[in-house]
Length: 232
Image 1: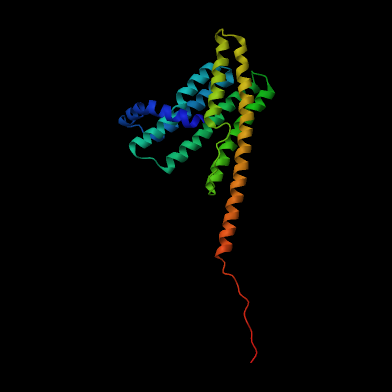
Image 2: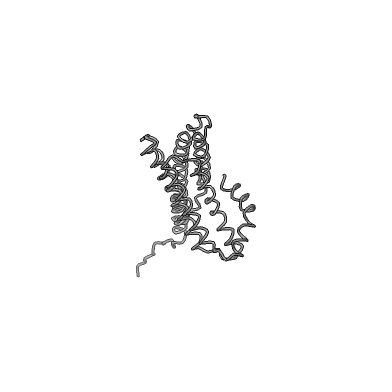
């Protein structure tokens, strides 16, 4: 849901900035690569140290590159399959860095093996949720379901909670530190529900497609009539 509305809003807001980058000679692919590098650096440098506020600020600044690069490609008329592939692939890298950084914190100074496992589950389930849709579409199925939690929801829930939790280090109420663990459990549960929704949808659509193909094949097969034999 957030993908639909937030992407449309921020695309309009960032259009002038995208146009400026094009005038400066920056390519959409360069923005994609720089944005991913920034997210990975922010997540793997700040999060393992427990610096959730600064990590969130850094990641958020670079996450917007995911909207800018596509905007630039459309303005320049250079949208391509390669650009879409690169963008989607690096999105998975960025997501892995975010949840990987949180897992490193809980495995180390955070000293919470349960939350480390939850963060790893969020990492893995997010990758599989994206894969199920991509794989279903690659075999010709519409995969007509987005599910409860898509990438945008996973990022917003996690980053907002991480940022607010990080405020506790600046003297904010200590209960804010509880928001990140709660968010991770919510994302984990939501990702599991979304995965089930997509698997069920692909199973239903594949059964319908196979049945339709079998019916079409049967209708194209000429019916055989028994030959008549006679005696002289």
